[in-house]
Image (cartoon, rainbow, N blue to C red; front, side):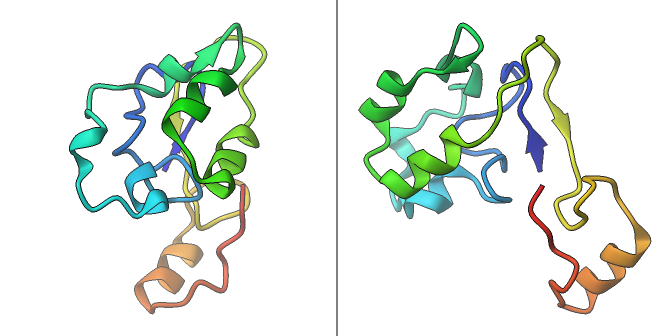
Length: 111
């Protein structure tokens, strides 16, 4: 999944960046035409913080909104990166991949 930095590489609606899901899945949107794939996460960051006003205009589900707001925006501008969601460190491990292939989420830990 994506780990947000400045948000310029992450599709706001389609990339996996909120709890290993995309925004469309979180909001259970059937008609995804309301979220253009070119809208980036960076469009919802203002002066190094989430633009709450802009998020409120688009997201009316308070649980999803809170999940987004809890995602820390780095103090210094860093590029977006990938992390392995099935390991608490965010680093890939063969152990967690093995558990994944066997259908177990025993090692899944939030980052």
